[in-house]
Amino acid sequence: MALALDIDSAARQLRIQGDPPDDLADYVAAAIAVIERHTGETMATTSAQYVAVTPPVWTIALPQVPVRSVGSVTNDLGQTWESTDVSVSENGVLRALSTPFRGEMTVTYTAGYGDAPPANYVLAGLIIVQHLWESRRGSMPLASSDLEGAYDPRLAYAIPNRAIELLGSEAPGGFA
Image (cartoon, rainbow, N blue to C red):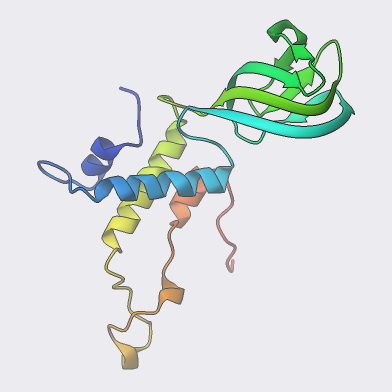
C-alpha cells in the first residue's frame, strides 16, 4: 500500500473513529503547504507555465519541481523547441540541445509528486498534522509557575523537530 498524505491517512494517524471532522482537510492542506515551503518541491501533480526573458542561454531553471514532463517550449520570436530539442531533469533544469533559448520564453510543463510522494514527506506531513491537531487550542503553558496555564504564542511551533529531520534539513541547533 502506497503512503499518501490525505484525509484518510490523517484520520488514521489521529485515531479518529468514523467520519473525519470537516476541518481535518484544512490541517492536511496546511501540512502540505509547510512541506512545499520547506522543501521547495510540489506535492500534488500540477500543470505550470513559466515565462522568462532570457539572453541566449542553454539552460532555464523551472521554479516548480520535481518536473515530470515538458509540454511546450516557445518564444516570442516564433521559435518552438520540440521534445527532441530539449532535455529536462527532475530538479527543473531545462536544457536546449540544439538551439539556445532566447527572447521571452514560455515553458508549459507538469510538476509534482502526485500519487507517489516520498515516504519521508508523507510521514513528516502526518507528524505535522498530528502536532497541529493536538495543539489547536493553543494550550502550551509558559514554563513559569507564576503564569500557570497562560498561553504565549512565542512558545508554539508548527513543525516538530522529527518532521524537520524527515524533510531532510537539520533541526535547529542546541547545546551538546
